[in-house]
Image 1 (cartoon, each protein chain N blue to C red):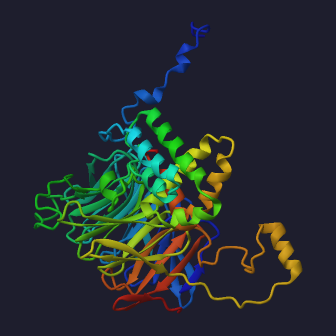
Image 2 (cartoon, chains in turn green, blue):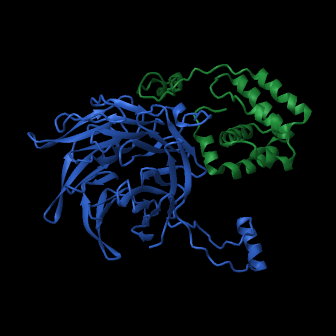
Image 3 (tube, one colour):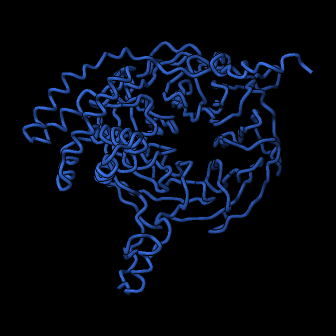
Length: 151
Length: 380
């Protein structure tokens, strides 16, 4: 019959934080990705209609190491814009133009995009997902699931 | 290729004796069963009952004919054959979590046990006390040790762990052996020294960053001990050459994660995992690249018979495709993940036969015929 039956604030203590054996990821010194440069680099080919270039540009320098959520959201929005600009028949060509690491990165962005569905995004992403899956196989998806640093 | 179904439950682990006539395996419970081969039939000849928890690792020492087993009851037992009976000797590992894997050293004077207590126990026999004693390797392991493999010099030990790294440790015990000579992995080898560690940035050999990798499921030294291969849960297989510090070549595969790996020649390795068939990888030392060599489980081509309209619609109903294959299940021999590979004939330099066991309770022996640069498989 212990005394404190009124306050239950102690229930909010996260005991795992105090476990000395807790696994902490190694910290890599992440440079602050500057989304502006990428923004400009990918919008110009986007405006001129050169979608392949836009895809390559937007997949360069992904904000993996940074902890800044804004940068990540910005990059995600850009990628979604480029992906939506592709015509359905060109999606296949777009995937073929990427190398192995590019396909892995594309798959990461696709799953990130699935997390926050907007009006038309899911349909577009599903098309890209099908093509990326045939290029990268199941291993590609496994790498998205096991990655410690997300895009 | 011969498939034999031992049980309906997963085979947790297995080990062969020296002349490959007997196999010791754990049928997913607290015991170890030893089966003897009679032509094509297998008969159970021994049941080793001592563990209080599932047996997670078995290793049969070929020369001294002793079996070491470890289990989730945090114990290990060394079994010796006295007459017709296997007698156990308890080994106190001083761990507070389950033991996960065990391996005799090449000279069989010590063995290593990997555990969930984030450490490796190196056990050796102390003559004066007539007792197995163990020493711990703790730093810098930060999670469960999943797999172990000894270097041929009896001192170096490779360990794959759930903290996403593969490391080479020195397990030099001065009470049982001489100081080892220098190897490509290093020359100073005090006990517990880390001679190699794969970093997250080192796993990927190309422009990508590797992004942390996954749990390291299987590790294997090559026959000479100069190369180390490991498979990881992010569907990659990587090979490191001792000496050159940062040349780690890795291949991101398109398959599901591989759970076990073994070298079959100095340049090629075979690995298997959740895709239920073994695959071959070829390593090119000059280019530092790992390439996919092919699936080793080529299913028999079933005759293509015409499919009636009714079947087509039925398939559409059931499986959303009107494809012609009538295979309802997997086409591979194993019907569930393969958890362990062991080399049967030829050693790790010129392997001609290897065996796989898996979660489907079956065991398959595979033949490998090596032709200069290409590998073919032949059905037995």
